[in-house]
Amino acid sequence: MLETSKYIRKPFSIDAVQVTTDNISDIATWVDGEVRTDDVGQYVKVRVHRPLNDRQTKAYVGDWVLYAGTGYKVYTPKAFANSFEQSSEETVLIDPAAGKKPVNAVVSKDEVTHTDSVVGVVEGDVVVPKRTTKKKVTA
Image 1 (cartoon, helix red, strand yellow):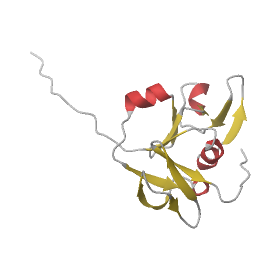
Image 2 (cartoon, rainbow, N blue to C red):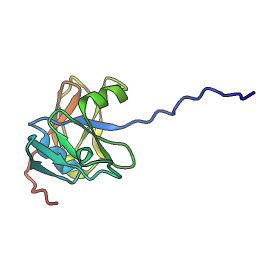
Image 3 (spheres, rainbow, N blue to C red):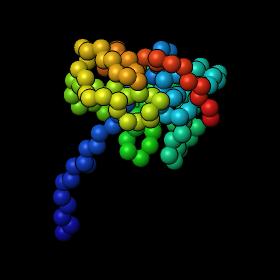
Image 4 (cartoon, rainbow, N blue to C red):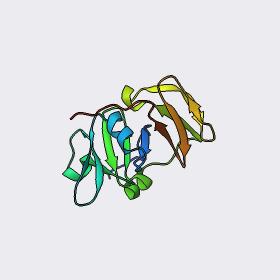
């Protein structure tokens, strides 16, 4: 007779932000990508490690972009909701120009945070960084 045992997949944490019309340029800077337009609309072209199809490299408004140690991934809202839940009531403010590294300590959702490199406000469940200077993104 064959015996099996129950196992639980180890959890892992991610940094994620939902794409909006207001933060699409900042997300493009964060992922070192660029804002493009196609028949569907505006999107961020994201360099994804081993995408299964072209759609997995396009982050449209409403999609989620996440960083999980091995690189960036794009999730549709439905796929993101099915795969992840928020770990706490705290969010980390990230300077898009600095890559994935946080620029300050964790902040609560009710705070407006000011740092030397970025100003951010909390909108819904995400911190939306506000650019203090414009930076041209190149592919």
